Length: 307
Image (tube, rainbow, N blue to C red):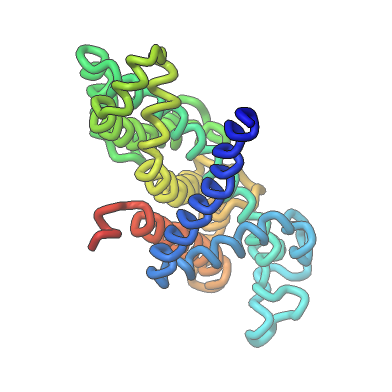
């Protein structure tokens, strides 16, 4: 009888945990869906992901193939356009639609890599600074202040000039520029959490410093970090496009949106589509991600929930 009695609470707790998780998800979606712009941004971003994943199937042509008999061909709906090239061609006869579709892969890749690197470095340094305090905190935060004192694009340009032009070096530079935001945000959250009762109880129970930092404190600091990661994702795409436009990011013939803008700027007056469509792609992507970030802030911030 004692064995069956001891097992009963465990079996009863399992449905409760699942119910609690479902309730939390319903609550999150309720507050997120209250922001109509966030829902629209989420659908647009989901569509962008699908386009990037299925780019080889969706693109009508290879993005690097040059059709020499169709230089600067206008879009299909304009006079002189061809149904073969729905969005026209660029100065060397490459299909704009195919290059835009493949460019979504580079934009998402840049965003994921940059945010991941910046998140790991920033969260680690922020945890160390907030948990230990004292001279460690002062040194780390002064380094972060020095990085933040420079305009992000200027500092990224300097780093890329040192490392050399290229998409990989551009991602490294952008990640280093963005990580102070994660460090400062994590430090503030750790300082607010480290003296709470549950942390004191874990410390008295014998938890080590690493366990306290990464298992006890960090999970309670994730809400603002998720929002910051979303906004940094859009900043990474913008900075990568800016570096590509300036010739310091992805190099031709890579179908990256910023590089496409750089290649097309001399034709802006006589071939509007070679500049307009890459610019619209950047605008729509960044706007959608920012709208999703606003929705996450509304859904995860307790103060906004109470209001």
